[in-house]
Image 1 (cartoon, rainbow, N blue to C red):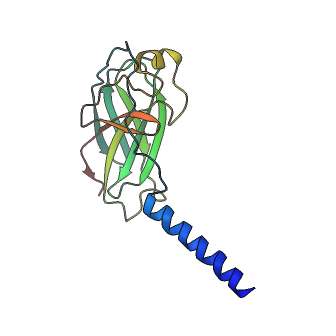
Image 2 (tube, rainbow, N blue to C red):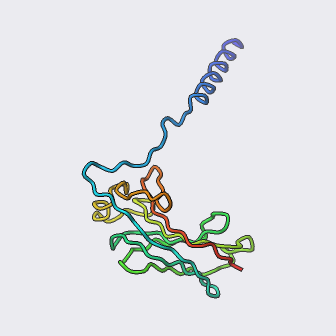
Image 3 (cartoon, rainbow, N blue to C red):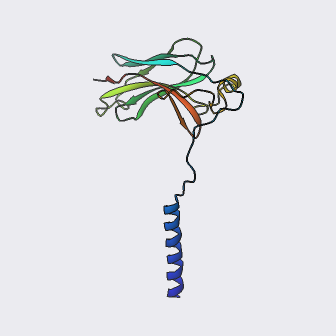
Length: 167
C-alpha cells in the first residue's frame, strides 16, 4: 500500500516538473493582425489633468468616431485606479470631473495621473460602426509604439496626462 502511494506521488511530482519545464502557458500572445483589405487607422489624442480645490478634472481629445465608449480615469502614483467613468464620445473635447474624497484619496495618495482609454470591449460593447472602422479587436488601429497597447482583448489606445502632486 505504501509503495503504491509513493508511486502515485512520484508520478504526480514528475508531471508537475514536466509542466513547469514545458511552460504551461502555451504559445506567445501576439498583437491582433489586420484582416486582409482592411484600412489601417491612426488614432491621435491628448490627456490633461487639473486639480481645483476638491475637484480633479481629466480632459483631452481623440480623433475617434462619435458614440464610441471611452474610459476616463485617475490613478495614484502606485498605479491604483482611484476613480473612473465610462463616457460616450460626442465628437468634442472629453472632460470628466471627480471629487477628491478621504475614502479614495487618503494620505498615501501623493500624486495622480489622468488617463483616457479606448478599447474594443473592456467597458462595454462598442457601437457596430466602431467595429466596422477599427476592427472587432481594434486590429485596424496602427500601433504607434507609445499610445497603442495590446492584450488578449485586442489593441487598446491609452493617452496619459502628466503626473501632478495632489497635496
